[in-house]
Length: 272
Ligand code: NDP
Image (cartoon, rainbow, N blue to C red; front, side):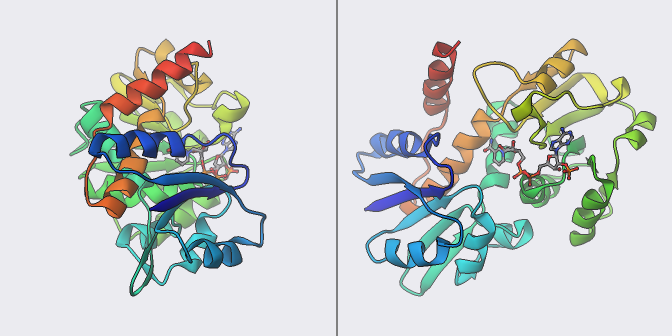
C-alpha cells in the first residue's frame, strides 16, 4: 500500500515516521513518502498519485485544493472548508479533515481535560481555527470565543456556524473577560516568537493553555500562560492524533498514540 504527505515545503514533515510507527503496531507494511508539489500542480499530481496509491495527508498550502479535489466530503471536512486526508475508494476520492478530532482527542484523552461545559477561548481565526470549531462544539463546550487580531475574520468564521455558543471579538474586547478554562493559541505568532497582546484576566490559574505549534522549547504563548500559573501544552499530541485518525480511516484500525508521542517528544528533547 502506498501513502504520502503532500505539501510545500514538506522536508520537515514527521508524518512518514508517525505512520510507520503506527503500522509497526499491527505488522502492516506500507510505503509512506513525502511529496513536494508545486503550487498550481496539486490536481495533476493527485491524478497521477492515485493511479497507484491508496491515500495521502495534505498540508500547507494545499488543504483547500484537496477540498476541491475530493469527490465526496465528510461533515468535518465540509465544516472546515479544508481537507487534510484523501482516501481513494472504488466510488471516488473521499476527503476528510482529522485536525479537529485530533485536537479534541489530545485534550480529552491525553491531557484529561473535560471539554463538556468548558469556557473556551481560541486566539486566531485562520484555517486551523475553522477546522476545530465543529469538533469543539460537538464536545459540548459551554462557550467558544474566537479572538483575532483582524476582528472581521473572526466574525466571518462565527457566521459560518449557526451556534449561539460562538462569539467573535478583537483582542481589546478580551479586557472585560474573566479566566477561560481552556485557551488555544491557533495563531502562527509562535512561529515568529511574537507575544500575543492578551490581558492578564483571560488566564485562569487552574486552566489549560494549549499552543497548536510544537517544538523543542515552550512557545512564547506557553511562557506567557505559565507565568500566570496555567498548565501548558504544545500541539505535538494534536499532530499525532490527527495522523492516528487518518490511519484509522485507511486501515480500519486505531493505533496507540501514547508511545508515538513519547518517541517524538524524546527526539525534540535531544534538539535542546
Ligand atoms: P493561517 O495563516 O490560516 O492563520 C494565521 C492566524 O494567525 C490568523 O488568525 C492571523 O491573524 C494570526 N496571526 C499571525 N501572526 C500573528 C501575530 N503576530 N499576532 C496575532 N495574530 C497573528 O494559519 P493556520 O490557521 O493554518 O495555522 C495556525 C497555526 O496552527 C500554525 O502555526 C500551524 O502550524 C498550527 N497548526 C498545527 C496543527 C497541529 O497538528 N499541531 C494543525 C494545523 C495547524 P490575522 O487574521 O489578523 O492575520
